[in-house]
Image (cartoon, helix red, strand yellow):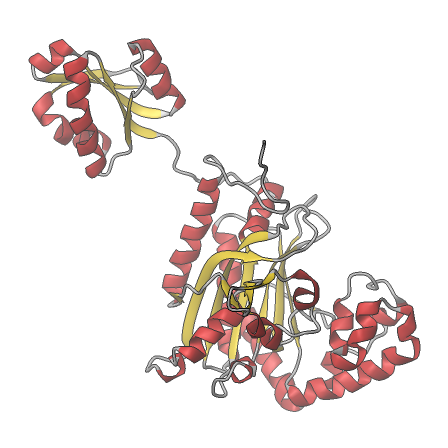
Length: 424
């Protein structure tokens, strides 16, 4: 019986996983510079967390969650996104009482959504995201956007497009909500069932519908920007000013809604403009969610964050034909000939590794020619050759494969001499 991988998942093999590791390393380095600290939350949470925070009118909650009952008949859900769990931890662990505010966190890990697999989209996917909780300063909005934008730039992406919008505060959204209901209600029967169900519950979500995106009422729908009150408008203008000051190019799109119910004020997406990237161009999305902490049982606390897919990051790199600066290859391959030399090479190999070198030796009892071929395949910088005679005479030969140069070192000084010649 052959057991295959579940649909919508993938194996990330050596040769490819190094790209993931580099992106993750860059993300961690940026977060350290921006003073965001890592948080790790469970892969599954109580289902109520997502229905309350993400919103029961969203596609995620209605169609895409992996939900199950445990043995205690409790409803649990594999996390479909990261923000809700981070905010739950913020409330439960009383991080709002910490001296250093705002609390700036980042996470990285697998998320799960039952959706149709397609290029760059999987049912298990990896998200990197940040959350800044405790400040309503528009400068934090700009900081969060710049962090995401800088990560893409740090690995060479150039064909990026930043789209921003304001969803306004409660007062602005309420006025816009009523305008949307009045706009869509007379012809709502021309829209899909999901949109019909959203009309009264969350009409703004209609603007995010993929099925009816070309309907004429979509193009003439009232813009949230026309309903922003003075406070919301001033806030949005500050965000735009900071992005301009930081020389981050952006476009304002009043139809940008985002797919989750908890957003207000700033919303943004970073897209790929690379030719051939695909129909779904969004790389990253986020926004402000003042009110979410209270929804999960915490005190009134403003927040903002974003999440990006590592899979789509890699797809964008491929679309722009960017070769990542991966560290590939081996520092040294030990060729040992004869039983005593093979035995001695075990300890020598360990010493090299403990000194920081990537090192390998033969484990298949191959001839010297086959061992050299193995060193070539592993892209070794050098080969260290130890035979029975060399062992008796306390010496070892080191050949630099790129030049063919070969030198002889005293065996008891080999590690120090190798460090002098090859660094570390």
